[in-house]
Image (tube, rainbow, N blue to C red; front, side, top):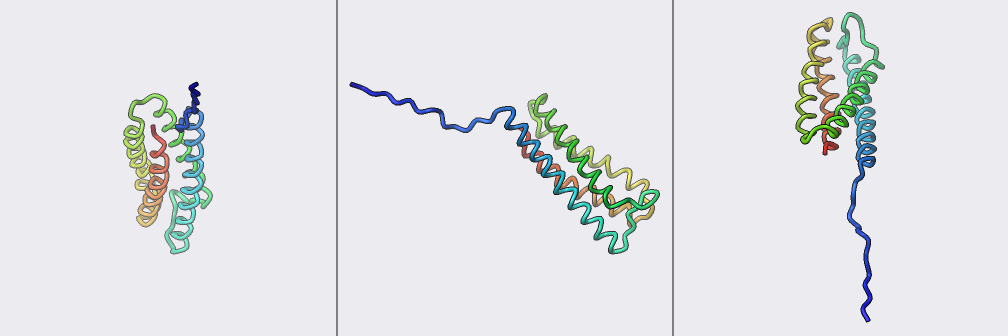
Length: 140
């Protein structure tokens, strides 16, 4: 007499919904971390006497708001690329590098002082250096 025991597949499989929720969590994490970091950096810069101004002083809450908005847009872009592209990570990195460069044009061109220009561009780069790697890990 022979007894056959069938073991269920114990391999880990990710469903589309698990990937989306993982990307959503990564987007929220990147948004919160980058928003807090850029706001703290802006506070420190302002405390050191650097005027963070583009045609008037920028409110500290504005740094968090725009950074969080950028992270959410980045997460939506990656979700779209994951769905439509055969190489989403490569496209995501290319696009985010381009968008980061474009985002630096406004403060570089319109900030009130040279110190503001340098500080605001640095804050854009700081935000991107947090958001892009966190999200890029979720390209599939």
